[in-house]
Each structure stands twice: as C-alpha cells, then as structure tokens.
Image (cartoon, rainbow, N blue to C red; front, side, top):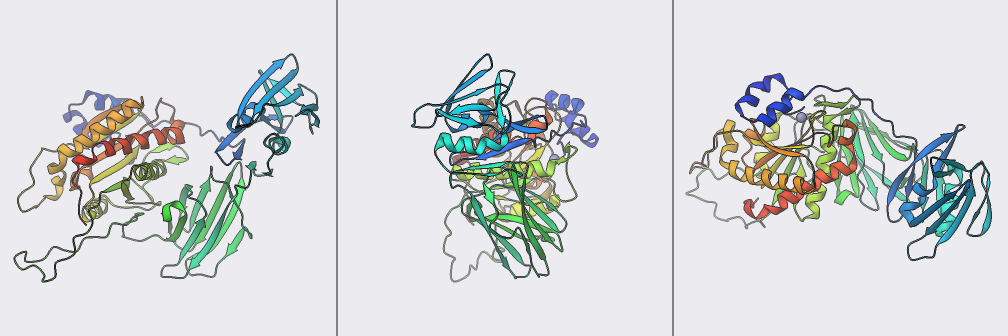
Length: 488
Ligand SMILES: [Zn+2]
C-alpha cells in the first residue's frame, strides 16, 4: 500500500513535520487507469538483444514497421520520395544493403533482386510497413543468417539463439520441480493457489518436446508451455499453494510448496545458533571464525492475499515490488554485494515474521520496497524514532530496535537519494514510523516507487524499474564501507 496513503497515518504525517509528505498524502487518490494491452507486437530475439516491434493492422492483416524491425540490428537510413520507399540497412561490420518498395504495390527489390510481397507495401505517416509474414525472410536475407518465425505467437528468432528448458521432478517432501535453462532467465512470476505462471518476455524460450507434461505427484500435477502475443509462458499446476525460487544465478527455477511459516529467500539466511548461555564458560572448541560477509536483505512488501495498492486494476503492488526486488538483487550482485529476498514468490508474510527473520539473519542492511499508484517519483524512508544508543548488553527493545541504527540508515537513504537525483528521477527522503522497519536491528530503509511522471503504466516499465534498481544498488555500494560487515 502507499506508505502515506492510509487515513490512520494522517497523525504521523503531520507530526513528521514534513510538508512534502503531507502534500503527498493530500494528493493521493485511488486512480483507476485502463491497462494498455500492448499485445499487438512482434518480439524479435537476436544474439545481441530482444526487442518488440509494434504491429499495425491494415485490412485485418498485421504489418510491421521496417525501420522499427531493422534498427536494433544495424544502422538504417530510410527515405521516401513520393510513393517510393528506399532503405539502406548496414549490418554491424558490413556494407549497406538496399531495400526498395513502393506504397500500394506488392513488388520491390531486396539487395538488387526482385522481391514479391504477399500483400501491398504500406506507406503511412512517413513510415513504411510490410506484411508481418515476410519479416523473417527479409531479416534472413539482410543478415545472411537463419531465422525462425513462430507466426501465431508473433516471435522471430534470429540465428541459433533459441533457449530450451529442462524439467526435472524431485519427489522430495514437498516435491520440487526444477526448471533448467542454459542461460540466466528473469521471468515475471504470478502465483495463485495451485498454480505458478512464469512469463518470459525477453528470453527466446522455446518448447523442448511435449508442451504438456503431466506428473503423478502429490503436489505437482503438471507443467505446460505456451507462446502467444510475443511472449512465452510456463505454467505449473499443483494441488496446494506453490512458490518459485531462483537458483544457480537464474539458470534454475525451483517450484515447490509454499511454506506456512518459513523465510522465502533466494540465499536463505540461516538463523543463527543461540548465544552460549554462559559467556564465562565458552565451549572448549571455539568455532572457526566464518568468513566475513556483507548481506543485504530485500523485503518486497505485501504478498499473498495482501495485494497492497492496486497500481492498475490488474497490477497489484505486491507484483510490482517483487519484480523490483529481483532487479535490485541483480544490480547489487553486479556490484559484488550479496542480497537475499524475504519473499521470492507471492506468499503472505506478517510484519513480525519479516522483522524476526531479518534480525536472525543479521544483514548489513535491510531494504523494504513499496509501490504507490499516485504521487510521483521515488520516496526513500527511514524510521521515525528518537535516536538511542545500543545498551552495553546489546539488548534492543523490540518496538525501537531501529533506534541504534538511525544514523547509518540515514546515510544509506541519503546515498540512494543522491543516486536517484543523478539519474534525474524525482525523489524525496522522508521519516515515517513504519513497521517492520522500527523493529529491524540493522541499518534499514524503505523505498516506495510511484510513477515517474504521473502515468501509472510506467511504474511497471522495465526501463524505469531498472533505473530505480540501479540507483538503490549504487547508493548502497557507495556507503558500503560505513556499514558494519556482519560475521555469520
Ligand atoms: Zn505498500
């Protein structure tokens, strides 16, 4: 939910003395925005990149823009002279190749050879469009490489880049289904009771054999592959709530039963053993000192039946923050910082569980993530508590466990805000008495993203989330030396 979007928080919004926060509270409303389907598109998978080409419907036939199709693959120079359309495409390291068509005609030339289209070439608003069905052949001729076109699914593969998956059922208790990929994947994951759906928008995942695999297993009853609208989906069905976890750097996704009350993390921080009852009488064999580690715990807020805010009617906050959490984890890993997620699937976790697991894992930093459908930009919160010192016994009152870490939390918040600023993202740092942040015995911040420019659809855009994730990771990396590294 929006961190400042509930009436009950009005009191603290005012006591926080933050005009900005108060203004944000007053302007927030539950907006209802139509979700743009964005499905009328071709997805092109090339060895260098994956991208989408919007399609135009003409007389019920799909057409693709020639410049949009070719530009990500090389350099393009297109000219229109009356009804004549002439395009030069230069593949990387190659020579310019000529493509010619005429508006309203089905005959053209590609690399000097006659080329017949199945329907007329279209000129519209200064752009040239050709029938979707020939995009594969045209790209193949221009790049002199094999292409594979899945016409019904609107997916075009250039070169031998198809990514195949393997399915491996382990009949443990509970059973686990291991999805294996030859390179890391980052699907969006949706769960509902008895079902986990992985949606691949950028990865050239193709079917490996039977598209429906039934299992005779008490938990996992089947897996199926489908592709449509420029994306691929893997659907796993089961008899009980399930969750998905990433492993092996994103090359494996493990689907198993959702635990009733266990931390769901990618790199599950093992709870620490209890301290010796009598420190005067240490155990005769002192433990080997473990290697120092620097662990960041990311807490995607909400989950399960607690959907948080409805960013759009079909996009709950719980999904937005989970996707963002994975990006933050990835960006931290790029900077050599290990991070775990408090949940990596759509499960409900109480605030007390979040605090308990975090404190047991003793991370160097805790980051809670929220999203809001109103407001603008990114708000970075630290806890609003009176500053206090850690008592000599190391005892921390639960309600104010965060007090001893406020200075460090503030440093992290400031550093993240500076990175947001340098990326020209609207941002503000604020105080709020937020649970479970007040109960976290480690430096802690909460980050709430709102649309960058007031358009709610942009909140889920990969480009925006990536900018936010990079800001958070860069902000953490910049103050890493200040944060105490914790020994497990
Ligand atoms: Zn929230």
